[in-house]
Image (cartoon, rainbow, N blue to C red; front, side, top):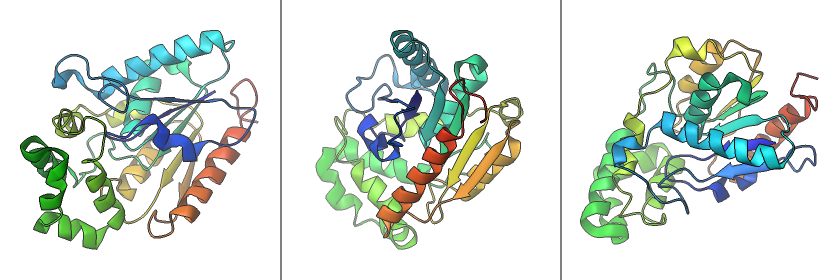
Length: 257
């Protein structure tokens, strides 16, 4: 069973392109609290990577019990990669392997430049709701990120289209400020791990993926994917091939084949 966590304010359907098509692995995708169809619970400062990891562990326990407790590959994209790290660090027996796709953070060692832009999106959502996108895309900050990274610009625009976007505006800045897993704890993770990075994505620095790949204590495969835009199809094909090959390299008991 491969369990996937999505990126900041994304939803489980966004991970469909990561399905391997292999009958040997069942994909379980999770909408975090205040993401997709899952409502927010508790104050916004309770929405942390650690809390999300606990939620995913509960899902793994429930689904695994019904499925006969198959081996688990824990996977995450962007924010989901940080959640995956917290999960396997806190519950090392919960997984047989780890997949980190375009991680956004790396134990506080890499600066993510997107937070000021999330702050700007939040301000427009709170003031104008989804229609605030019209003024947001006219700002110098947006125009600069559009010039540097069309992929990051697209992600920012999509925040205005998310389910309950205005009501969840504060989540955009609360979660990125959540404590990251320190590198000393990352080094204790000894699972077989696939780390995937892509260039020209300010919100997913290649240096974050490289830092995590170097710190992890188990066998690591590091793969550089092509950038997502304008060739999104090739990016997704390469991602699918890499994750599929990695999962198929694991035997039915979660050990390296």
